[in-house]
Image (cartoon, rainbow, N blue to C red; front, top):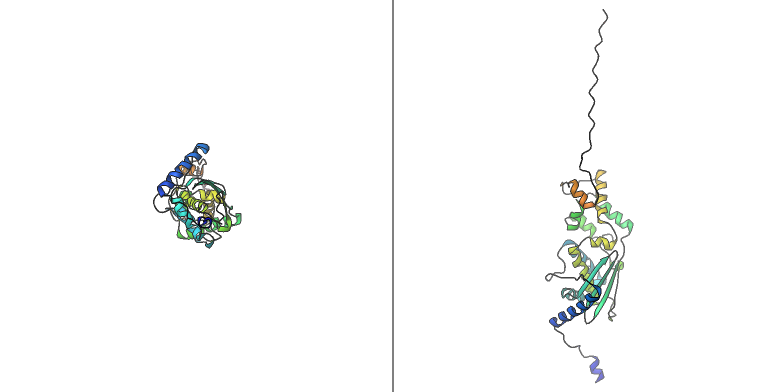
Length: 261
């Protein structure tokens, strides 16, 4: 009989019961930790914007992750990731299952040489930080950002993770749910990808501006930002007064020389 019990399936728990259990676990954790930042999926799709979709697609295109990630899709859709916080190079999350588990994901900083090359290759093609974060970019820039090993998105060897659950799998469903949760969070705050890679998105546009001054092709749009908009965007004070131009002095009058009599 003990041999048979060893292979018995765990008791069935309905989706409603699992949801109620997660709510209880989240409430207990919130009582200790304060306000939570849960991952909320609206509809069946995990991500809807360029940055969120690009993050998820980047994970799935690597065979290291592709076979392990599906376990986390249903988990993140069900609201299991009750708290997810992004810090420079680091993500800390709490995932509610039969218990509450802590998941940590570390993302390597983008190498300086790789970042400079990316800025150089995208120079002159990005209108503003707003356009960058909205994903309103030329196809060539998108392809460059998404390029394997050289783009902005990390490869599997640049991602490390651990979970407090007893599952000894290389990637448990809790980690997979958090990785998809990051993609969902980038839908709302795409600038967090630059925080994870420890680079400054404004530098990408600033380098483009410097390149333009040296004779690069003009940006895709000819729209100019007012000084007030630039001040708010970059957090610096920009004077709206036009530089004064010196008036050209009047040409000297030529003196007539009389011929001697």
